[in-house]
Length: 142
Image (tube, rainbow, N blue to C red; front, side, top):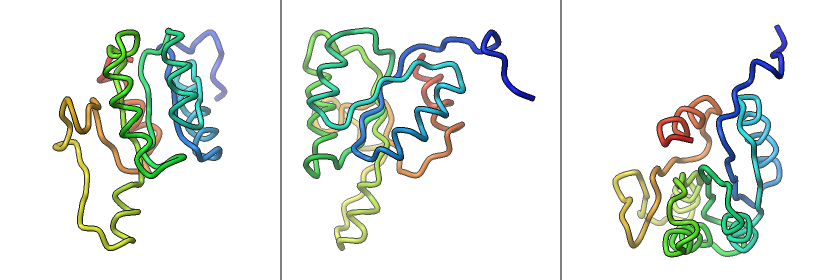
């Protein structure tokens, strides 16, 4: 049974930041089907411009974009900026898998979140089911 546009509740605006265009398209479609407005950015610079303009209710950040740590740097910049520090941040990344393949023993999790090193509200490994991502966003109030 198709969803009637009038039945969709607007849950807010989510910014997805990732350099993978397929990931952006897939998750944009999943979130829009749940009633979210979605803004996308391909790197930290684009994301800061969008976030500083306002109207973002939550952000989903990748780690490895133009640089291997760009998402970490973006999360810190968003938290330091008076205009953007209130935005709930979800880090959704495959950095743990990339580290494992490279032979590194470092692995990030929700337990590593803190105000300086990993200032995000949730840390999730890719892949994640769209319904699980929606549940996380709802728990964050988005």
